[in-house]
Image (cartoon, rainbow, N blue to C red; front, side, top):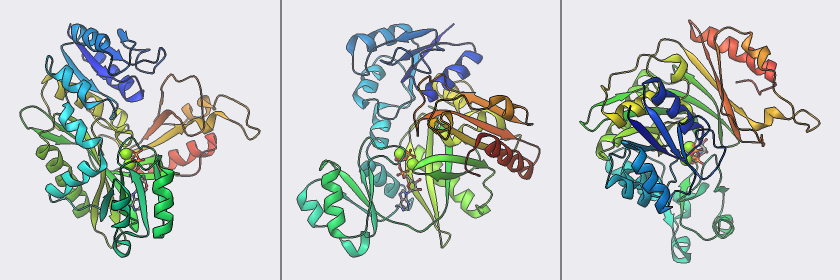
Amino acid sequence: GATLGVMGGGQLGRMFVHAAQSLGYFTAVLDADPVSPAGLVAQYHVQTGYQDEQGLAQLMQRCQAITTEFENVPAGALRTLGAQRPVAPSGDAVAVCQDRALEKAHFVRCGVPCAPHALIEDEAGLAAIDAAALLPGILKTARLGYDGKGQVRVRSADELAAAWRDLGGVACVLERMLPLALELSVVVARNAHGEVVTLPVQQNLHRDGILAVTQVPAPDATPAQSAQAVACAARIAAELGYVGVLCVEFFVLADGTLVANEMAPRPHNSGHWSIDGADISQFELQVRTLTGLPLIAPRQHSPSVMLNLLGDLWFDAAGQLREPDWAGVLALPGVHLHLYGKTDARVGRKMGHLTVTAATAEQAREVALQVCARLGLAAC
Ligand code: ATP
Ligand code: MG
Ligand code: MG
């Protein structure tokens, strides 16, 4: 059998490995961590950093095709691999997603609205900011931010200057703070022939900058907003010449306008429900686009509510480590528990997720509320 490689050993890689194995592939994971979630379940584990020449050579030797599960794998490493093996997504496409300034320029090029913003690379850029247009705003590092890390909310020019220096004076994007009515995301898969399929629009709730809950169908999106989000995501992928799975995050503003926030060149936390609620998951779509297997539209067979399980749940009120009451939630109907094999729980760390599927959205929500009560999660 052929072997598929993945750069990165996190939970997204683990779920890619599961999907690849179901379709009969062997898998190889490159990650320096000896006990990474994906490395633990793959047939081969190349235990080096992303830029290690020998590690990359080993991965190429093992694998017929290679993907990534981590958006900050150096684009150069993907280009190195791509010179000798099919690599999807490409280093060039990933490079755009790694930099908020390039990402926003791509949205603009596609005619997809995004927040008013400006790039700040140095003191001159800081001084040139149009405060009336961009404040209050959110200052975000152009590179390497995730889960709300590397972001500061600023109200005045003084706060902006202090925040930019606190972030280390690195390249940042200042975005105007927008009045959000809701947050949506769309997972799109595109193959080398330019065929595109999407998962249904997902509605996301964040807590402290981290995704907490995803509901599909999106209860509060209008049909027009959903159609626009899907069309924008497809255009963003096509204009990048993208091959693989891409997720685009959107905001719906108080006045109903849709704007793109950011994109991820890989399956996305908000698409995890598709493992249990759709007949083709986002990870199987990743396998299909990587290998050239037929790309057909996934069908959602069950309304779904996905709850993230953060490390916080592993600590009781006194701060003592404890195992959450899995038996309690697995006694409820339609609960699909996914734990990532991480042993060191930390507050805010993504340890797993669970998806509730049901015959109706109301029932899925009802059971999700019971799950929240049993685990001591904030109600969704
Ligand atoms: P992720 O983990 O999704 O990659 P991230 O750290 O890259 O997150 P963003 O998605 O840019 O961060 O922002 C995190 C959250 O902050 C958003 O989901 C949204 O709730 C809020 N947010 C970001 N930008 C804006 C904005 N311009 N106006 C209002 N709220 C915003
Ligand atoms: Mg992000
Ligand atoms: Mg985000």
